[in-house]
Image (cartoon, rainbow, N blue to C red; front, side, top):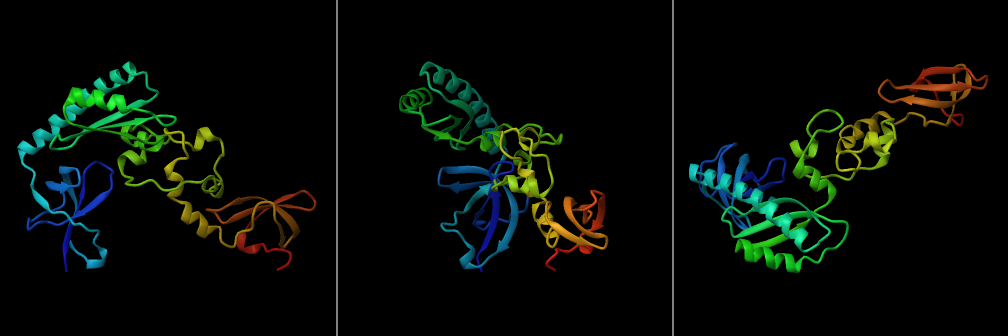
Length: 267
């Protein structure tokens, strides 16, 4: 069976599979690999693992070598250059009077490509800007428009919980988040309380959603009529974690019951 290693190029980014190339690699090793963009600097996240042929996404590119101190110095220099390039790009955006916000810049490891990430409300005609940047940096230029969630992942920051944003610290990919998740967890629907730094619904709403789904199976919905040992009433509130329901009886008295002790009238 073929053997692969999992390599990540940025913190909290997707893990890609590569051919170990005959190298004895371990988790945490810095490596130089061949990618569609040329040579790239990455870190081994998943050690050598045997997989079936059907589980491989081809082409499976090889690990060229372990990264040396010279490679690490080059990576550090690339980051410094990218930071300076971002400032230059921001000035040129102003010169060309374009409605866009430069978020980040990134050099490929071999410096054959310079990518600028930006946000904008709509489409931007940046062809003249690309020509200007190519003449300044003398390398291949790519401008890549990103969304607000990707912007938050790149910039980072502290969430309402007081911790570093999940997308910055460990989330590899974004999952769809819906207001239904907040409702299912009985959270306030105030946008200010359930939105992240990006202005979208917080990613953490999905973490416990499956648990709430399972716990709510068989529980009556708020507003439904139920039969209790004390008579018929209407559910006014549910506590999913405790498995309790509050029922307003026909005499307007509110009683609390275990969810398993109430039933629908037709039952």
